[in-house]
Image 1 (tube, rainbow, N blue to C red):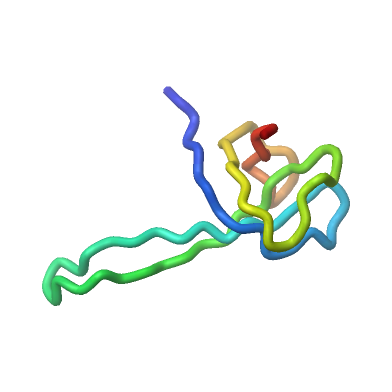
Image 2: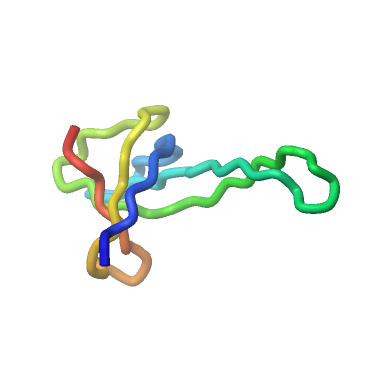
Length: 76
């Protein structure tokens, strides 16, 4: 099964080797037909602490690295 890849914005880089990424998705409401924006935060592994708040990053699913980390940053 292929691993999911998401694109989002770094919202926090306070922890060592970890960043918090906010991923936004847009969809049309089934009844109102209005475009809705929803966002979700993911904790991702950043080995070298290279990414800072405000950066656009791509994250990929991986095996669990800790209690909350299930994603890793793709090297770009």
